[in-house]
Image (cartoon, rainbow, N blue to C red):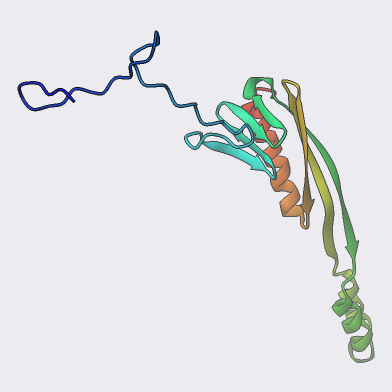
Length: 156
């Protein structure tokens, strides 16, 4: 390599027949459309769906945030029943305290089960995520995330 008078060598150039003197550019790494770039902030996510500042990333592809539409299908149910311990205390206490033990039958146990489908569509991409629900609190959280995602997309 030729060196200048300070001892610093000049950068190597590529000399090919009729082509430029710059080294060939490396092919850019393929960008995955299923995951957002590391620098983007995730605002809200569902299983398989991530909403960032620029778009909605799903396994089916990426949707620009301003074109995304979110839909929610709530397929949960809540059952109310008298727990077993209350029935046992009402029967066992009936012989001791008679009618006051029947107040145990007023105790109720609520159980919420099922799943919620969250669907995002736009820009030719559609993806549905089914979220299993085991409590009323989890159901409320998914509804809250869905409302926030709609707000981010400018649909509210």
